[in-house]
Image (cartoon, rainbow, N blue to C red; front, side, top):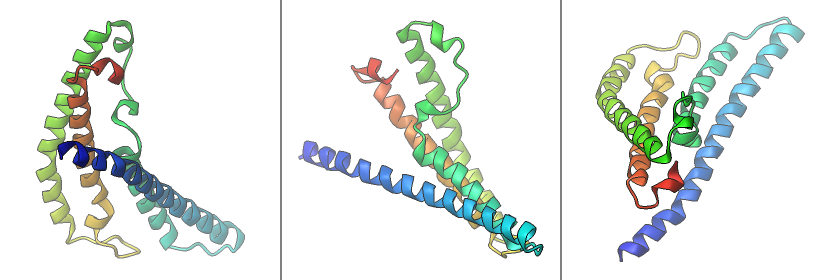
Length: 167
């Protein structure tokens, strides 16, 4: 029974990944289209639009945090690996476990403070589009939560017998 549930969960993961990638692409496309509209109206029609700059900024913020949370695997994020590359696989595993544990602890600790700040932002609105600021920066809590979960998952993978495949 547990094996069936696990295989069903494994079958859903590619669909979730594809959906996350689609959302990321659409966010980037929206930012790009807003930028093109902004350039056209400003330099071709000589009549700049007020909303496009804010729209592009919001789309860019969401694109960056969405991609970091759901599109880029933890092991592919920017890292300082000068020492990491010259040590043995066992030591690399130790480095990864310590780093991932620190990330999980720090990001989990950050969630309630982020939520508190987002609640504070419900009172503020963006200057042009009048969107509540917690919607604009709400992607950050998605990033913090998803990155903590991904890091915990990778930590668990490094504790398995086939951990060398994860290095």
